[in-house]
Length: 154
Image (tube, rainbow, N blue to C red):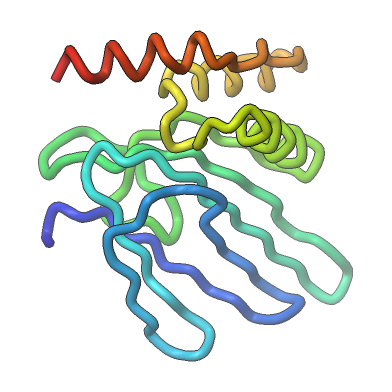
């Protein structure tokens, strides 16, 4: 269990919302009415959305697509993620977060679970967002190739 990556979700109505957009959890722990903790095994890919506001409006909109790492592997620190994770994609600001969410929706519309998308595709989306260009669509053919590669290469 010490190898798990833990993500703390917090929900305070109208103030803070942390949620998992996609990912295969192996453990869920309810800490109290406002907090839960989800755990992921090493290698798992998941999307973590963080939104917060104050009396004047939205302060932060953020999405991170992360990959859980093994103990001792290099990782980045991400708020609410313990011990950290490999960052595949990171977007700040509602316009970019919305584009990522729309891309995830398009992948799901193809019948593909975003968890099974090639990590390099998420990096590609990150780079295209940074250059304000639309990402290439993810295709079922590319997904089959990635799943085959993953099955033959440990």
